[in-house]
Each structure stands twice: as C-alpha cells, then as structure tokens.
Amino acid sequence: MNKLSLFSKISIFFIVFWLLVFALFPNLLVIGSSFLTKGENEFLIFTPSLQSYIKLFDPIYLSVFLDSIYLAVGTTFFALILAYPFAYIIATTAKKYKFLLLLLVIIPFWTSSLVRTYALIAILKTKGLLNAFLLTIGIINEPLEIMYTQTAVFIGMVYTLLPFMILPLYVSIEKIDFKLIEAAKDLGASKYNIFKTIIIPLSLPGIIAGCTLVFLPSLGMFFIPDILGGAKELIFGSFIRNQFLLFRDWPFGSAASVVLLLMMFILLALLAKSQKTTPKPFYKE
Image 1 (cartoon, rainbow, N blue to C red):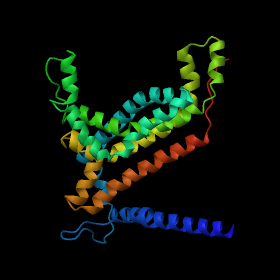
Image 2 (cartoon, rainbow, N blue to C red; image 1 turned 45 degrees about the horizontal axis):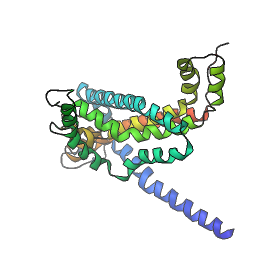
Image 3 (tube, rainbow, N blue to C red; image 1 turned 90 degrees about the horizontal axis):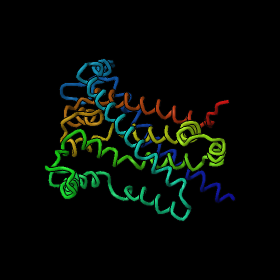
C-alpha cells in the first residue's frame, strides 16, 4: 500500500512537472510577449505595449480571422453531417461488429496527418483517382479542377478531423436509453419527431464535444490549406506561423496566439458546462 502510494505521488509529481514546464510556462511566455514591443534587431523589447492587440483589429488582419472562422465553421458543419449517421450506426449495431467499425475510425490515427494529406493529392489531382473514377462511370466528360481550391481544403480538413467528431458522438449516442425510442414509436411518434425530440437532445453533449474538437484544430491546422489549397488563402494558423518565422514579429504573433487561446478556453468552458448538464428529451403534453 505504501509502495502504491509512493508510486502515485511520483506519477502525480511528473505529470504536474510536465504540465508546468511544457504547457503552462510556454503559454505564460506567449501571453507576456504579446504585451511587449518588437525591436529593429531584437525579437522582443521589454517595453509594455498594447499595439499588437490593436493591430489585430486592422481590416486586413480581421479578414484573415474571419476567413479562418468561415473555414472552421464549414469544416465543423460538414464533419457533423457526415459523422452523425456513422456514429449512430456504430452505437446501434451489434456488439460483435462495433469493434471493427471503431477500428475503421481509429486506423487513420496510426498514420501522420501530414502523410495522409499528401496522399489526398493522388486522389484529388486532375489525373487522380477521383477524376479517373468519375470519367470511367461517365458522370463527367472532363477532369474536375479540385486541387488548390477551397473545395480541396474543405475535403482535407473534414477528412483529417472526422474521427474527432465520430468518437464523441458515438459515446454520447451509445448512452441513450433506446426504450424511450420504443415508447415513442408505440405512442405513434414519427421518425422525424423521435430524432428531433429524443435523439438530438440526448446526444447534445457529444455534438458539442465533437464540434469543439473539430472547430479548434481547424483554426490552427495550417499545413492542409498550404498543401491542398496552394497557400492561396491565409488562415489564422498560417498567419501566426508567419509572424514568428517570417516577419519575426513575436509580440504580434503572440497576441494572435492569445486570441486563439481565449477562444479555446471559451469553447472548453461551454463543453464542460454541457457535460455537467444532463439533457432531457422534449415531450409535448
């Protein structure tokens, strides 16, 4: 018992040490840097300033942020539309098939997302597999120009982040008491009303969790737009990277990072609140 207690204390110590050194301390440095000033030959000058935050409201930079929001919202929406039926099928299928279906969802995690993004080029390019298939079955007469467009970026983002939407939805849907659905059918409720008044409210925590897990990475995942979109459109993640690596404007890059952190904390707070509240199906008297 004493050995177990000692092992637990050592484990907790290393976990706390790791979080402090590699999570909290770097974030504090970023927050502190955002209130400093860029020098001509120095990355940072220890002169307090809010100029970096004021610059973020410039229409040029604000448009980058709005474009990133548009991309993240679109990715989250399409991921939800595609993931919900798949998660529902997994949750309602026989137990002996659940492991196989979940394995199909988890398999993409075994390969780097960067490698998978480059693999999409072979599918989406003009002479790729998708165009070859569509030409063979006669749906199109000439190859589609998909690569280096916003469509390719959406496909890449949804493909990469889809498992992060499926898994929370599956966990949430699996917890639903399907006796409620059977009772609703016995009372004459239509499939649409069952879905709207029972399934959706009870799976709401999974929807919120999945949307959060997809939306946040969509804002900062810059390599997919760079590879599939040809870096034609600057998004928030690329913008932050450029401030640090190209323009060497660490205060401005830090300020943009702090804004992203604030959005993350807000969404995580909403997620935590949703998990504490057990939604109830809506019934009409």
